[in-house]
Length: 120
Image 1: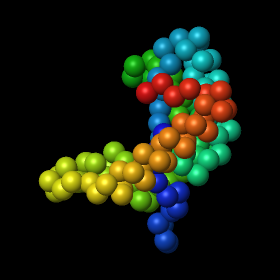
Image 2 (image 1 turned 120 degrees about the horizontal axis):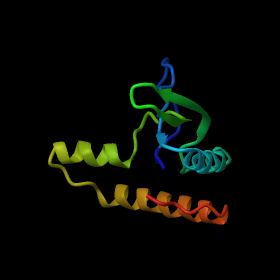
Image 3 (image 1 turned 60 degrees about the vertical axis):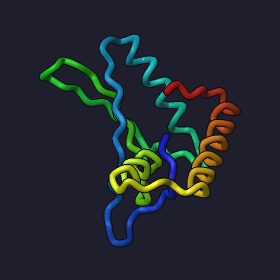
Image 4 (image 1 turned 90 degrees about the horizontal axis):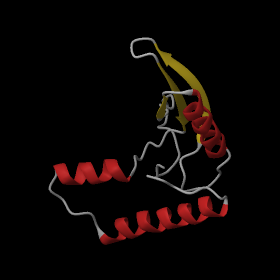
């Protein structure tokens, strides 16, 4: 799940994130595909939208990957913000933390209403 403002930078091509799930057998691939299909249906302001999915084969390791194309977030995500602040030895402001926490709770409430339970 990525949080932030879902807009592309002016004058640039969107650069989608590509979360990948390695599938080592047919059962795992089927389960990953079912989960990805559910993710494609989610529509919420605080959840980075999944646009499409595709399957890729890696010959070097003989493995199948399910790849999800997500929308581009030019303002980054919480992880990026935390890393940037750590590098600057800067504390995050209370209002920023509260805003992200509110977005996360709102998004989790929505996905639970859709009978999807977040695992990671």
